[in-house]
Image: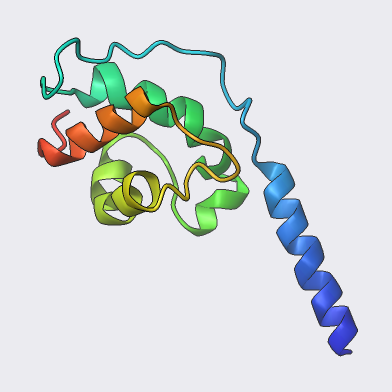
Length: 117
């Protein structure tokens, strides 16, 4: 009985990891600010990053929705503290991958600047 539970748990964890891939979206070039500390907008910079790096696991019907469901600006701002911690502070997201230094800086700046649309 105990072995069955362990096997089931291991299988579930394996399936969750397989459900997320780093080739979740076509390559994108967000329009990052040219000047460090410049205003970062969600629409121009953050949305393309989140669509490419988060949507594959955290969109409706995907395995990552257990933790959070990405559905645009309001879903990010509603769970901003957890997202900032996972992406910027601990760098535990995206799972099994990483963001470029420029993407991380843009996301950090956006949060620090008050998460403007």
